[in-house]
Every structure is written in C-alpha cells, then in structure tokens.
Image (cartoon, rainbow, N blue to C red; front, top):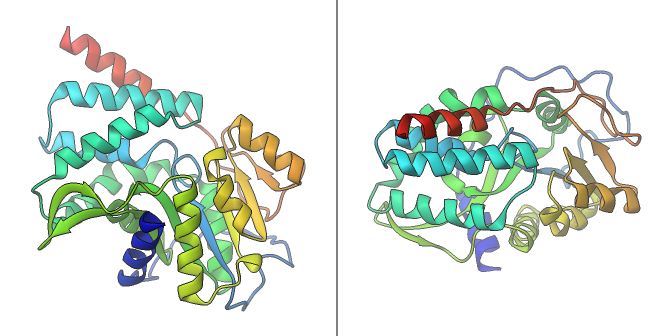
Length: 293
C-alpha cells in the first residue's frame, strides 16, 4: 500500500503537458467505448511489453552505460536480461529484482533533475522506436474521448513520467526512489510498483481523481497485473503471456496481440496493428560477450 500511495502522490504532483501533436488515426472506432465525455472514466496502461517492446529499465540502463555510469560487465548482464524478456515475453522476478538493485546503486548520489534530463535523451535514443503503434492508438482513443490516460509501471517514476509526457499522456505511476534534497539515497519508498502494488496505486489515484473504476479501462501483457486488471470494468490483455491469455479467455476479457499482427477473436477498439518484436537484445548480448573475449 505504501508503494501504491507513494506512486499515486508522485503522479499527482507531476504536471504533464498534453501537447503531443502526433496522435494516430484509430478510425473506425467502436461507438460505445471509450465513452466520450465521461469525466469519471480513465485508462491505465502497463508499460513493458504493453506500450513498449521490452523493458524500460533495461533501455535506461543502456543509456546510462553510454554515459559511463557503470562498466561493460553490467551492460552485458542488462543486455542478456533484456534479450530474455524480449524473447520469452514474460517477466523474470529475479532479473527484475537484480535490475532494480543495480539501478538504485547506480543512481545513488545523483540528482533527480540530472536523471530526468538524461531520461529525455535516452527516450529518443532507445525507446521512441519501440513504442507499439497499436497500443498507442488505443491510448489516443481514450484521450480523444476526453479521458485521462496513465502509465502504471514498476519502472522508476521519473522514467515513466518522461515516456508519458513524450506520448502525450496524462501522467505516470511508477516505483518511487527515495531522494533527500533532490539527491537519490539508493533506497525505495516502499516496494517496487509491481503486482498488487499497481492495483493499490490505481485505487489510490482513482480515489484522488474521483474516478469510477467500473467505468475505467486497464491494459497489460502480464499475469502479474491481474490485480490491476480486475479492478476496472474494462480490462484488456495486450500481447499477453500464457497465464494472462488463459485468464482473459476464461473471464471473456478483450484480447489483442501486436507481436505477430494477429488479432484475438474478441477485440475492443479497432486500431492499426504494430508488428515486429525482434531479438535485438540477443544480438547485443552476444556481440558484447565476444568483444569481452
């Protein structure tokens, strides 16, 4: 609950400008959803493998390595974890915990403003081209309906806020790293925003924003986000892992898969399909390993 409440508070404090001019065309659109002008409805999107191919934290790690925040052996580990995630399509808890621990130690002593500025550069270098066009179109449909759209991710809230702003979304809920006088301490506020913590963050934000969760939508690829998806009246499984796909079919949730271009039988808002999860992380890991040898 502490992680969820901290993330919701961080999201509320951040001011996200809705100035994106590159909305995608999602016509024709399902007439009944999202409901236009419904001020009590909003949409919540997981980030990794839902909005973006791969994990934001690993892409951020690549950018920090380029700026000499850590050594080559750490990048090899990041690249291998990213390759595994891209190919398997599911989160490995040990990989994610190791990545978080590494990230905390790397940023300890650095200023929050410095990492925010670097995050803008890293988005352009590694993340922009990995946004799934189909998922982005779904988010834009909610924005066009006058609804707020939030990212909900275990990635650091500063990274999540950069991505949300660049996509023209309302804001982001993410893992909150402790800082004192604008400097990272190397500790978290509560736990990472993962699994049940995401649901708590969404619940806290909905209460603060006076939203009716039964009229809201949530989108994710992972069975770890079933608690969040179960909170809302309109859950969507996007690029789902095997467990989430089975769960979604059992409960008749909407499904869409952009990894191969195929559409599931029950689809909500029509949108242009994004194609092409490639094994670039594997190539990077192999190349780096050979270089070390």
